[in-house]
Length: 321
Image 1: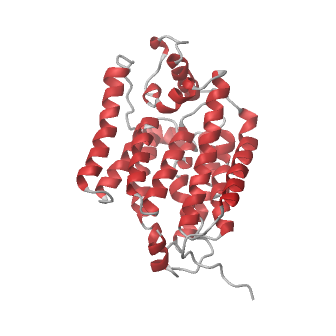
Image 2: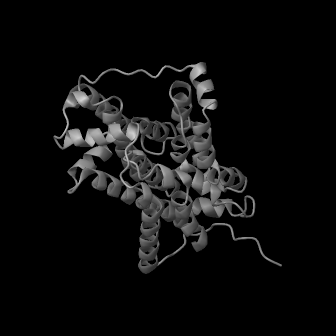
Image 3: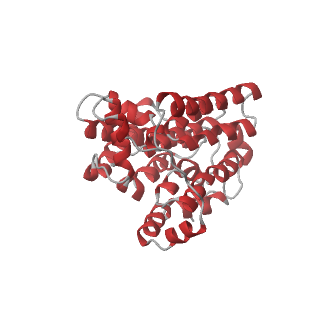
């Protein structure tokens, strides 16, 4: 009779050679998934591309459109890379997706999941409709997902300073990632002064960027409206995008959460907090599957618990973290 998969206990040990093979495999697979739309620009991806063009001196300031230039870190790195900008930006996003998959796999290994589940953790990110559809575009979402993956690694493996650094850099990628630092402060994962300092640093960056480094951009408002939400629910394209982004990871995460052990409990409150920006977007602007894609770093650890004996080894998994 087949036995149930073993519950996570101690960290899964993989040799440097194995990790090299895993990371290179993730990179090759991500490249294959992303190559067909490499460097595309459409809708807001064009705004991010124009931000990078401005930083290279190829576009006047008055061509920028808020709020996209405020998410400056990824376009700034792309602008600093050599070569044609479309290709440089797309290559950066490929590296970020590959890196995020590796970090999620490392988190699974540190929590003691089997080797198959460690590899599967990265595959859940890469072999997904959002990675196939959105990642090749010149968007900042891959950078945000990478930062969130590092944040999750930090909180689940007892490295709050790593989580704080990821939250600060993540805020420079997308401003809503400042909520990661709000969570870090509220959950007292760092000394209060240190957590408050990290939050103040990220908040100060937002203020300096908007009113000193990029002053005078046209103002924009996102006004919550039931009519906007109803319009989104009636948009077939948005619904298909949401459904395909949720199709695999969300059901697995819901099922896996029933078997999740104590080390994953911090993800409950973190998910509740990080769902707020997508909900606000749903009430204010058109939405698509990227709002679910952005939650993958928090959903995938739950998804890995599918098939594990319920609540077995909770204390052991807690000590592994």
